[in-house]
Image (cartoon, rainbow, N blue to C red; front, side, top):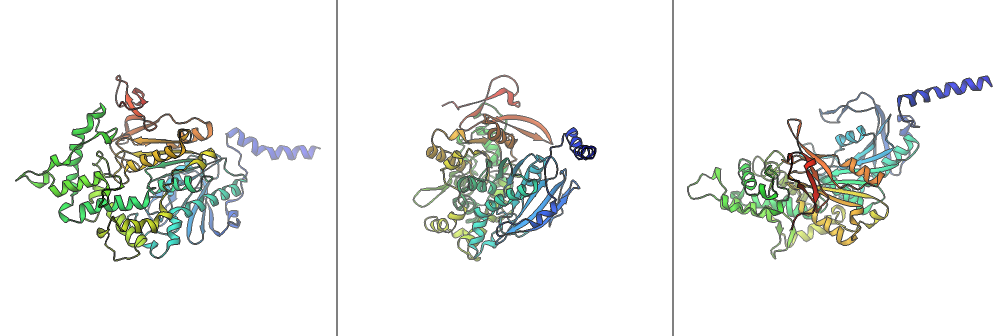
Length: 518
């Protein structure tokens, strides 16, 4: 009897210590033992403990700090879907988070994984089945030439299998599966999130989806390529980056006060009807301080959206506002010289390697009446996440928060609004019970811009999934030199933030979410 009591006292001592320290108890196996885990068509290539607090990003000189100790698992699913799973060694919150990619993927999203890990999540990311060229600026498509199976992995299969395998690895490590699973992604990651919601609604309980490139084929034809043709096909149409402030300042001067507050941000750019023709060079005027008629035409085509020869809209255009800054037009539309902008880099590779499979193809010769049909037939099945029927996600209790920056110079915010409206038309009045859209005034592509563009969508999603509290607003903030200088509520579309008339317009507490005045 004495021996058994002594044994019991010794065995519970570590447990008492952990309880006193407030450390949750997690029954987990050794990290290296995960090498023995068997998964379908998958080989776990490494399982190592990272406890230094810093992670060196592979094949770069970058590092990520302030990390809790974790088990790093690397694996490959056939044919070539590389993925990693990071598992907190202590203080696991009992949940799983998949994170998305950007551009044409080809790399694992380590920084997004780090953000999830710091919140206590077991987290996973994939390169989606290929490795991007290091000189591609994130938009390499050469890997797709002659490989439709890799395009499918990139479009939808890679993330789905990573999600399934990631949760199984977490279950093996902790001896229990995640209580909840979440997804976070923007841009290409937004397309991945909507692909998950549409095709694999059982994968995630909640999804935070930003600036989604879900209408992929039409976006590449009607945005990346359309804007490039507008500014590059005729060399005289090219707009130098030095002229972007001229347009941006004129837009703000004409439209900033429409929302009642002069703050350099257009709350709803659809209300701005500025005509760039007023900036046309007059006879004898230096062209550095005005736009030539061909440049004005290019701006109008970028704002007007892509159309075929019959006038049918192919893809909506960009909206006025937010053109200035490093994440604005100088990066996406103009570049520092012709053919250096991101839109062109994305378009040329896509049509050469994925659509026409001809490395010599000149995308400037694209025919919107005939070639668009070819592109849709070739890539839409693998890449387009446009199905508005989200009732399977709704039925299983899933929640989806969509957001998009009004000043996105890459993906038109109108595309996301259109998709949201299509979901409403398909699902009906219950849409707001599982899906809400938040438009972000003054935000560029997935962040940056003159408006409040930092916000915690993850907490809003967690509260909706776990507590049943739907987000009625999400407070965003803007920083200058690292200091918060403005806050503003983001509202469920079509509501907007309305100033109450008292107090600072830089304080979110002085605004409320209301339907816009008609």
